[in-house]
Structure formats: C-alpha cells, structure tokens
Image 1 (cartoon, rainbow, N blue to C red):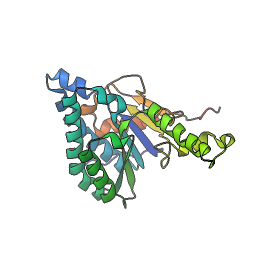
Image 2: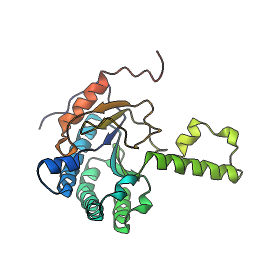
Image 3: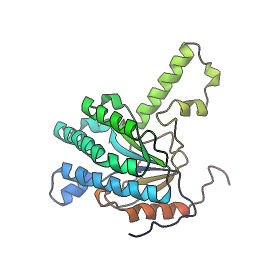
Image 4: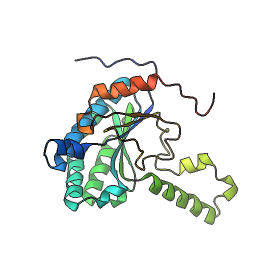
Length: 239
C-alpha cells in the first residue's frame, strides 16, 4: 500500500464542491444516476486521503436547496443512494474514528433519510480523529437567512441588543458554528463559481479548481490540491 505524502501545511478544514456527475454519465451515454453512483465512490477516495494526511474537517456539498428542482426520479434516486452510501460507509467511519455530521435544512429531507443520518451521527459521535460533514438541502444564502432570523429573534426577545451584533455573533448562528472556516476549497469539473456554497465561511479560503469530473476524483487529485495549497501565501488581507 502506498504511503500518503507528507505536507508542511495540512489544511485543518477542506470543503469540496463535488461537480461533474451528470457530465461523467453523459460522456458514457449512461443515466445521470450512474454518475451519482460513481461519485459516491469518489467520496471514499476523498475521505481516505483527508484522513491519511490529518485533515480534521472534510465538508462535502452533497445536495443543494436548488437541487430540489431537479426531476423527481433523479431526486428520489439521490435520496436512496445517500441512504445506501451511509449504511456502507458507517463501518469505515467508525474504523477510522471519523465523526459524521450534517449542515443544511435536513428537516426537508425524507424521513427515511433523516433516520439514517441520525443513526450515523449517533454511531460515530464518540469518534475524535476527524469529522465528515455533508451539506444537505444546503444553500449559502439560506444559511445566512436562517442566521439573521435567529439573531433577530434574540433581539426581539430581549436576549440581545442590536449594538452587540458583530461578525463573531453571526458566525455563531451559522450551521457551521462548531467548526473552523475552510482553509481550502476544491471544486471539480472546472467550473469557476461557488454555487451558493459556504458564502460567509469562504471569505479567506484558498480556492483550487480542477477539470477532473467528480466520479474520476482520486486520492492523488486530493493530494495535488493540498500541494497547491502549500504553495500559497495566506495573508488574510495583510501584507
């Protein structure tokens, strides 16, 4: 078995926009769901690569709020695939001591999916080596709306003064309140956009775009992104 590479700087939190499943399937004259099935295998590659080099948080953009507008058969197939993948990967998460969590409006997902998510979260809750986060029924603007509503309710109830609202308070009311902002964002398939993903949290994140379609994404592609990250000088607005 090949050893994982050593890096001077290991990003604590890596986020990935997993793009290209549909194109991968179309190029092979296959149904779109076949692309999603192969994409689920790429998740294993990314998870193992992240765990092997010591990434503490891996957040994957799995299903956006906009994805609900896709044809019902595709959405239903994605939900079934999600349940199946979680059941298959649960043992790996426990073996690797990886905790599982979600962000997004998970309450909008089918009950069967919610039960599987809850079971996986519970089964991995004591794991401490890393955290895998799936963004499900997630949208960056939706997240900000929910955060603003939460803060506004506290002001209305007298728990908070409007003058106390600052960046730190907003961050504490986001879905991601318990994790650091991403150090590195990887986007596959070559598209140059954020697609409504972690809009607040990505303010100073290093961006890496690869033309590789997500179903073809392997460990070496993950390592290449981290190599590029190591070549960057992060100044956070300074000199």
